[in-house]
Image (cartoon, rainbow, N blue to C red; front, side):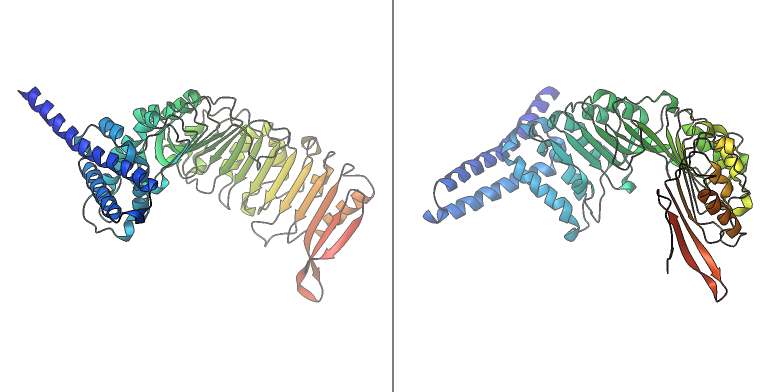
Length: 490
């Protein structure tokens, strides 16, 4: 008895769907007839066309209102003649809904429910959910279950996609689980994948890059760490890997961006592959979450938000790191010292920012920890001790020092750096230079006792005149031919 009732219910639903499909076919035939002769040939054509549109809309919106009661595969099969036009209407409604929303009913859910039936074509090669997910409604938001339902249909409905962008407002907390990720892995032509503000497990991310063989670019902003990072292995075809933990580690997340070619801004000479780690921890415990990333070659670390920095005993070791950008922003330099002690040996390029004078950091301390530096850049920092050891600067070719963290300080001296035998480029821009130390450098260059490989040196400093208490900025530079010049900046 129950089986007979189910069969009758199915027949009734299919009958209702056939009503909609008849409307669609009538419209299709009507369009052909309209194209065959002018609309002005028969006034009844206008009436007939209006009736077709009314019938079509009535059937379509009846389907939308009851879509969860019907077999969506059946709907998708017979909705074909309407699909293109109706999807355009749906997108328009999503982007303009806030202009006429009456604040009654779940409008967002109603719109998204029909999408699996409308987004279905072998011709799709690009798809972006942004216009749909950013629909603004006074009375409803997009549920995660409805969002996931649509993502699950993409693998079978649009198998030829080459570019896919899944975007969601951050406050909706959408996520992709096993079935949704499995749908995406069916897209074997997929070359570019961008997932913004949608949580994806790290294990699922690794499955995406393993199974999508043609993937050349993937960027996922919210990757939840559900497996030990030491188990993460990225394919060698990805030449640039960006691991961004900024403002994410507290939620046990990170952002991952993999590219098969090096970005234009990544212009380090001789570098064919880069794995960059951005870290701005608020606690020492958060740093341990990235301890297992042993293939990292470049570090960008911000220590100014580290609240329990003095509890740090040892920094994680990154055995392949070559480039580091470290910033204290006037806070404790303890984490910076720990980092250099553990990872300085292999560093080739180092940039330091925001070191306060009270930290008493010296050039000897930096070069003793980093004996293989080729480039040292210092910004907004006060360093003490004109005591850089020559034996620790054998490879230094570039030195740059711009501005002090605390400008009210003793005159700055840097002549010991100029003893580096391979140094080629020097740029100094400081408000308070020790003039005697500066003259020592100038005389040493002129007499060829130091900087024999020098190609360019530029010094900007504040010259204090007897009649000018504020001083006058002066730029002094020398080109590769040894020609000196001096100019007033103002």
